[in-house]
Length: 203
Image (cartoon, rainbow, N blue to C red; front, side, top):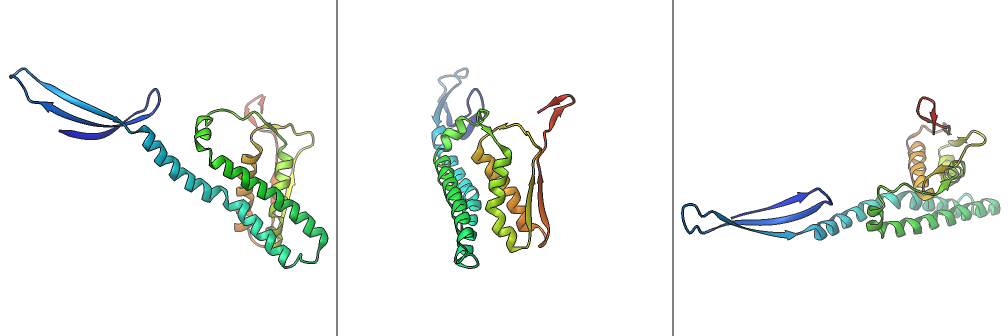
């Protein structure tokens, strides 16, 4: 008898365990085999979804959570008596906590994300606004290292097709790394410009 696991990639990936055994022959030319298949696709997907959830949750929630912790520490310390800074930081904290809530909603819907994995986003996003919000969120951490964050966008820049929260996460990770690993007293500069996919075909 033989037992093994196989994956059939098309038309939709499915995983099976199979057990094969030879049926006792009734004669020299009688060669029969019994093959039993068990569909393990659902169990495998559940296992992978659980693993993906843990990995994604720890990664995606780290940046807004660290931003909130930094802002709270600032409000309890240097900005404790600064009313203007308190209002600005509370606004940023409100934005970041809302983003965390949306991230949790997305993480709890991994099956929906997998279904729409290859579906292009339909929203139109102002890149300048997204970058400005990210820069404001990280400004306190940057100031702690005597660093500045400058965002330069050309006038009249068209909106881009994308998901605002996902773009925020991408830019937050990039700028957070720049602040974390940059030399104290330096500037983090972000420049936005249209790109061309090919000659004469601006995007």
